[in-house]
Image (cartoon, rainbow, N blue to C red; front, side, top):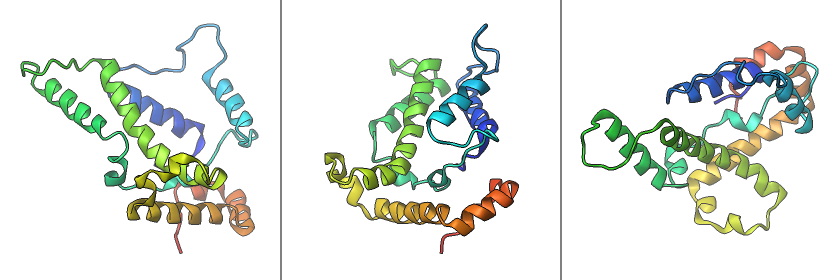
Length: 181
């Protein structure tokens, strides 16, 4: 998933919430700051530009392979399958209840593992001696390929010519997938 701009981020959240039946609109809280205002504060605190209220996470452009994602929290796939089977056949003997909360929780964990793999590449660069990197998943060929590709995307992102082009033609970058050389 390529993350660009607050509106596409809100759209993604809306899709994730609507699939289990949660209604999503901008007027969720009365007398609170607007969600766009709060998002602007969060973006500013995280170091994103606040002038046009858009952001770009280069490493989010590359989805890790599903086989690699399934190695993180592997039990969640069994829960997903059980919830789906119960929803299709409510009279089966499984005691699981496919509630909105249960389905949403499973979906969040499934999205988290993809995000964790993407973010782990940069976290590993910042904290190379952390014990977590000794886990076998971080030495697997699939992970090493993702790591190589994400580091290349990040390096391209910090290339001054690429940054200048991105600033001059921002709309072009919303619809373009990074080219790996």
